[in-house]
Length: 345
Image (cartoon, rainbow, N blue to C red; front, top):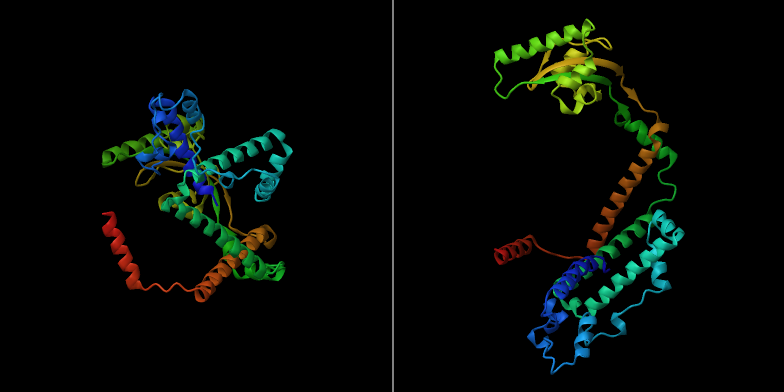
C-alpha cells in the first residue's frame, strides 16, 4: 500500500536531513513547516533564554516527532509483518534471504527504516495531503484489482489447460508460425560512398574493390585482414567482415541477387548499393525448415495460457462494469477535458 509513498518520503526526508545539516537556522524551523504542512505558527522559538539548551538538543535529535505522534502511527516490524513480507517475495528471493543471516538482517533493518519513515510521515500529517492520499488509495486499489483478477482467472482456468490435444491442434493450425526461414552466413568488405557521390567516385571505389578481390584470389591478401584494416562497416570489420547468420529475405535486393549466385566460400564482384560498394563472401546456406511440435510445445503452452488470461481478464472487466456501472457520457468526458485543459494552461 505504501510502496509509492515510501519512495516519495525517502526523497523528501533526505532533502530535510540535508537542510538540517547545512542550515544554521534549523532550530527555528519545524519539520512540519519544512514539509509545507504547517504555517508559521509552528515555528520553534530559538531564543536560548526561552528554550534551554537541553530543549534545543532534544529538538535537534527528535526532529521527526510531532505533538500528535502516538503508538498507532508507529507500527512495529514483528514476526507477523516479516512473515507476510517473505511470503510475498518470489521463491528465488525468499530462499536467498532466508539462507543468508546477514542479508536477512539487512532486509529487516531496511524495513524498520521504511516503517519509521512512514510513521514520521503519518505523525506529521502527510497522509492528509490530497495528492498523497490519492496516490496511496490508487496504489491500494491497483493491488486489490490485480489480486481479484488473478484469483478469478485462476479459478476459471482449468488446471490441465492447455491439454495435449489443444496444443497439437494449435500447432497444426499455425504451422506457418513455426517455420525457420532460409538463412546464410555472410561476410563483406564495405566502402562507403559520400552523400553526393558522382560516377567518378563510384568508379574509383569499384576499381579499388576489384584490386582487392584480385589480390585475395591470388593469395596476396587475406579477406579477414583486409576487412579489419579497410572495411568501413564498423559492426562487421572487427569480426573480419562477418555479418552473421542472416535471413535471406532480409538482405538488400542487390546483395541477395549477387550472393545467391555464389558458391560457398566464393567472393562476389563489387556490388553497388545506395550506400556504397560491397565485396561479399558467401558462407553455408541453412535451408528453411518447419520445427517439430516437441521443439515448440513449451512456447505454445505459454502462448495459449497468455491468450486465455487476456480473454478472461477482458470478460471480467466487462462483467464488472455491468454489475458496478460508471455511466460517463462522452459529453461529460469532453467537458472534463476542456476544464482541466483550461486549468493547466
